[in-house]
Image (cartoon, rainbow, N blue to C red; front, side):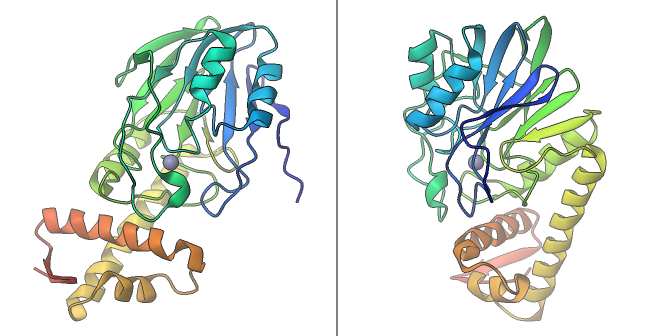
Length: 281
Ligand SMILES: [Zn+2]
């Protein structure tokens, strides 16, 4: 399939996207950079530092005032283009906090961007004027501890917290299942009309979709509890039973997700760990 790399596509009046050329098992066709606004624009998730993508973003901005360069979080497929774009345009980097970790485990393209340095950090509920309307930061930790979604004119830019094509990777130590579930609950109480995720198609039924995601994780949790209730099991043992037919490239990420569930269950005193094996408490 021909994905529309380096092309400006209008999604609705005032919201457009440019797809970066970084497809992978974790990014779908690549990272979607959103342009928000008409006379003045803000840019959400500038993406990887690829010259072709930076050139496309500069063409898309087309000399309009750039209110801010904003990142939902600092995985390497989201934020590395922020600084070079700030240098090209003179705009400020405003949004999620910096977070420098060597690695988040098995996901090679998801290691943190240690060079990310925002000019201004937005905390939960803080706002920024973009093209005459307020853009609001919605803190949504879970996928990463520094993850923000951004709300503007009834649309929510959901980053990697809610994606349109796959469930979100939640891998310790920075990924946190309890925080992720709480962040889903936070979105469920909002009334956004549409989500624009960093990867995959827009979500046009947000309430129903978030309920489905919560149900999916609760089902996974019950499945893990049943497996470790049966006998002591290691994580690879749980992955084999819980993810039949899994794409081998995703085995490590699935193991990370199982670990995230087990840590959450351990905190709730429902399971306990002995060496590499887990059992019910
Ligand atoms: Zn990410």
